[in-house]
Length: 271
Length: 265
Image (cartoon, rainbow over the protein chains, first blue to last red):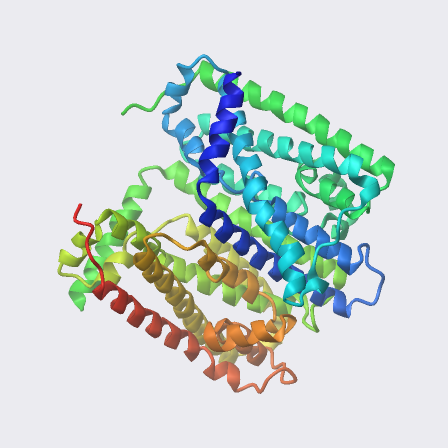
């Protein structure tokens, strides 16, 4: 069994132990989802022009964001792994016969898959089962567009991989900084805006939208959510998959380069 | 009293000096934190650019809510974010030491940290608030300014109360409850928009139980003279709700603290 698979599996099993935390986290995300939902509903109420996205589709889009939130390279950026690289404890990792980048990538991916199987799964259950029960089905999430399933599954998979690659990339910057707080807050700012998490990309003014389309961040959320809603044509969906795949490859390569440079001139903090 | 104040100042200055050992880091942290809130602000700007107005409020009017909510929240973070560590201090038994010292425990916890990176958020909120005031031009009056200061006081007290409550619950159950984030982190995110956009049960909750509306929305309504939404005198009275909330939170904390049993380790 490859060491990376073992790392991935340990991470998964370890996080499954914290079930209560997963439920609490899921409910918190649902509450934040409602804040966004009420805000946009109020904006829609007064708008007279036809909107680029119908209200039920918008709700699905927003819920997808809350569901994917725990997978995005936003939560857990401050984790013990980042601290390891910063503090120099990474030296222990270097003594192991595995690639440093592969080590962290496998762990991050394990954490993300776990989050998807626990937190996100609980959220989906609440959205699809509890909301109709308490009479809030009008705020619910629509089922996925079946015709787009062949695109949805790979797109979701690529979104996870791309998130893990970005997350690992931010870790690797820890070789050069004393505190990761600065780089993590800047990553949060850029990622939350350009992925579509704060505002759906369809509302962006054209210039900013063009920038968002090129940047990799829409690949961790917007691309998948639009395919889920059936809002993307087949060619748009294909384009989205290519965009996700290309950026995944690119960011992995960049991360590997950072890891190599970082370890070449690594100074371990003593202690 | 003088002694308590000087202890608090000593704690803060120790915290500040230790952070200033890494000047570049502090600078990066402050600027990083400053930038984060611009991206959230950009989101609001994008929505207003697309839709024009929100429930009859223009962007510059909403900026008053934004400024009040975020400034009050940041002030409370500076003051009492240390209460977040209560769960940990109780779990490890370190709280024994706090009880042994001849200084008010609330002051000791308040002085737990004075995180300089929060200046990034403070600065961002000030810039947005200032821009809102400039854009509103002659609608800003001297009495209005007094109202804003009064509601900031009430707002900071309310958020302090929330952190003290969170800490008290943490002391009781030995861990921080993530759901509190809905009120603490979520508080400014929700209160930065006019309360009228939320459904009735939520409005009632945030008016009478956790009086967020009383420290942001109603004062903003009075300040902007939007008399169609509420009688204008309400905004002058309602910030007192935040202070009452903080007082209740302190009583709860004292009650929980009395039941503290050391882990003995």
